[in-house]
Structure formats: structure tokens, C-alpha cells
Image (cartoon, rainbow, N blue to C red):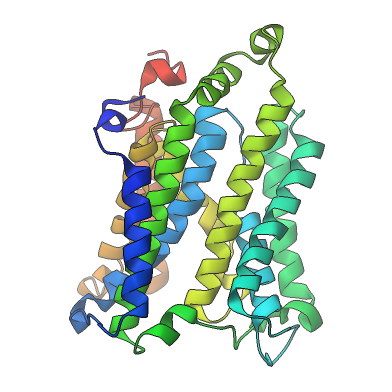
Length: 344
């Protein structure tokens, strides 16, 4: 564990308290409307917190257990689309069963868990590089399927008329963004606290042993495959939960929300922050998403560069940052080289 992870903060308890406060705030008649100039930051903040939920699961899989999962967006999409199909009321295209949103939330998590279990059983005995390829392929297959079957998923248009339970409890607009960001932040903190405790428990030490040497761990009587499968399902469940919550925030789903960019952002954040450092990976994600946000409108100040050229320059800068991190600090900014077995 890095120094950053040793701060004396019980995140799990703080997360529980904040979730209760967030729900009470949503049910109360009190609204907080942030200044209009900050609304973009709240919108990006909600996306960041949804990605944090995915990242926490991916970090448990790769940072602590060594599983190279390049398909977390697949579970994010399955959770979001399942929740949308179960709850949408009269969508323009696709299936909308009109069930209450809690049913959709549970169904989204269950569907992601089912996909994670099936994928885990069939792939977790593969070598790391093959596991990475297969999970990446599954993510692209899921993205292709949701964009193709218009009669089921709405195709490229996606599904609309999905319930927005958080917006329904507040007035739409700025108060809704504040309350939703509060709730997503509380859930992200709770997920971080629970997974951090799991990583520090005896169970987590077995995961670290698996990452270091599977064969030695097996000789100690541990069922390595079972440990890896459970960790894989944990990450899938959390990504499915994030997808369902994201669908309920937006009131719609479409293939554009679930592209490979989600996986890329999560992995870049983890590599920058330092895999296995539970707080460090969140810091890494904050760095890369802050860069994207702060350079979003910079193109207006450089009229000689077209929008397409500026987008390419941003990607090049992100790539250069990643190259520098991997070359000069492969354990990440807050990662522990001993924990990751990095040799300089």
C-alpha cells in the first residue's frame, strides 16, 4: 500500500453516513442551486464519479489480483441498458417494460454479474495478454450489439423515457445536478471504502499473493481460480451498478455513452495514479479528466488550429503523459514499486 492509502480515514463508514445524508437530502424540500457558471463542472463531476465506481472495481481486479480486464465498459453498458429496458416507459425505439426504477437497478446489477460470471469462467484461465484481448473484444461486441438491434436497444438512437428518480425528487436543473453529484460522490466513497477494506483484509492478502505468484499461492491450498472469479464478478457488479445509476441520471442510454473511451480513461487514470493504490488511482483519474475539462475550450484561444487538429493535439498530449509515466515512473505517481514488483 502507498503512503496515500494509509491516511487514518474510515471511508466505508463515512460513505454510509454520506449516502444516508444524500438520500435524506433528496427526500427533503431543501434544494441547493449552485451558480450557473459551475454547472459544467457538476456535469463532468457526475461522470467522473460514475467512472470512479468502475475504476475501484478495475483496481481490485488488476492492482490487487493482477487480472487484466480491458472490458469494464461492457459491464457498464449491460447495467445501463438492462436498467433502461426494464424501466423505460414508451421509448421511441426498442424495449421499455415500465417497471419501477429499483427493479431496473437490481436487474442491471444482476445482468452485469451474470456476464461477469460467464466471461470469468471461460477466460480467467487464459494468460494475461489473452485475457486482455478477450475482454476488449467482448466490450466491442457488446457495443456493436447495442448499436445494431434497434428493435431491442433502440440502435444508434438508444432508449429514451427512462425514469430520472433523482431529478424527480428535486427541481430540474441546477438543484438536480447538485443533489445527484452529492449522491454519486457518497456512493463512490462507500464503494472505495468497502473495496479498500477488502484489499487490506486477509482476503486481499491472498489476492496480492495471486498477483505475485499464482503457483506458489496454489501450493498453499488456495483455490486461485475461485478467488479470481469472485474478484472479476465484484468488478462487474460495481460497473453494472454505475451503468444503471448513470442511465437514471441521464434518463436515456445510447451507444455513445459506452464507447471504448470509458475503458481508456479508467486505465489511464489507474496507470497515472498507480495501480493498487486505491486513492492514487482516483487521483490519476482526476488528473486526466481535469486535463480534458480544462483544455475543452482552449481551442477558442488558438484560432489557427482547427477543432480536429486540436482534438488530435489533446490526444497526443495524453499519450505523451502516459509514455512519460510508464518510462520514468511505471508504478504511477502514488503507486508503491515494491507492491507492484517494479524494478528500476
